[in-house]
Length: 181
Image (cartoon, rainbow, N blue to C red; front, side, top):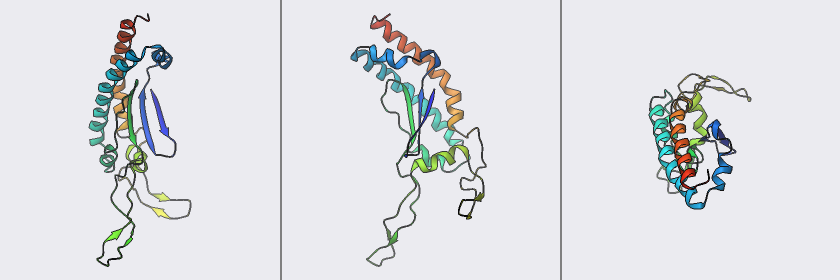
């Protein structure tokens, strides 16, 4: 399994890469294009099932921002089991901005928090304290700090062995059908 934080986007990508298949990518690259497409077709439903588990665990998270982060969940078609969470998608409520020139009291150019900005707090919670500038802040995510995580780590730890086993069987079957073994 690989956890990759995408640089600068505040996203969390989960790819299931079983230890028994360290050379999986080189093996997949050796497959004919039709077989690679079959692997993609087979991995997509497994990715969607993992995403379903993330949604289920996310709804039991004590941080209210988790439901916003869940809106950014994607399962791209890939040769690996893959779920992307976070990123630049705007999911938070509108804030800031400036008064409209029409004078009707509406604000324009408001911004919203991206899913990536809320991701880590929704997973690990927060605590009150003081930032580097000496400003006091509150417990922004309403749940105390939890180093084990509230929903992503729990869902991945619970469901990865199940989908990894199925994925291994699928890839082995496709390799046999391609007569590479």
